Amino acid sequence: EPEVTQTPSHQVTQMGQEVILRCVPISNHLYFYWYRQILGQKVEFLVSFYNNEISEKSEIFDDQFSVERPDGSNFTLKIRSTKLEDSAMYFCASSEARVAEETQYFGPGTRLLVL
Amino acid sequence: RKEVEQDPGPFNVPEGATVAFNCTYSNSASQSFFWYRQDCRKEPKLLMSVYSSGNEDGRFTAQLNRASQYISLLIRDSKLSDSATYLCVVPSGYSTLTFGKGTMLLVSP
Image 1 (cartoon, rainbow over the protein chains, first blue to last red):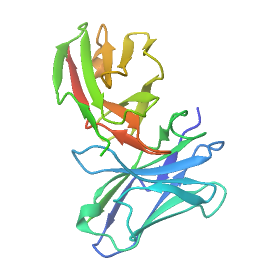
Image 2 (image 1 turned 180 degrees about the vertical axis):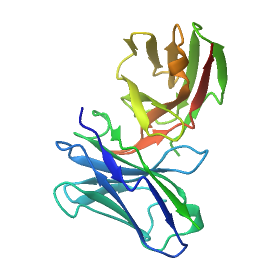
Image 3 (image 1 turned 90 degrees about the vertical axis):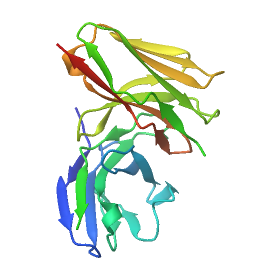
Image 4 (image 1 turned 30 degrees about the vertical axis):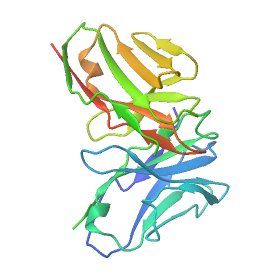
């Protein structure tokens, strides 16, 4: 069964450093998403991406965040200057079409710890 | 603000019990709804989609009441492997999912 993959599984970084989280969505999917889940809290939407541009973004997704599809398979989330409060599990997801009609499939997540 | 509210839990039930979780949502425009399960420190995984009044899949039944903006999930004959957090998820934009905080279920022998 096809699945979303994410690397690394864990990342520890110093406050102020840049991090890049990587995702390989399911191959025939067209919509890509990033979510985050702070420990003990609910899953929160960050951004959606379609046709090489951002479709929607939340208030969390400020200028410190960016997304990119550098090639035909990878989808990345970059945090330019990490803060302590960026510590969370970051999930990538993908779907065949828009969310109201299609299921989003989640990757296993990258656990980010900012020290 | 579009919110999704769930029973806080946790629900502690013995194997074989029937348990029901409730969820209310504020976005009246939503047409589809989802129940995901999330194991500890793992990703959410789709359990059921609900597009009309309800859906049944084996031991799991989801019901939707659009007038009351209420969704429920019923699990019959609970198994130990059903222990997880159950997330009520509602589309809230063109491509945005809003998650509830989840209800934790603990099934004991």
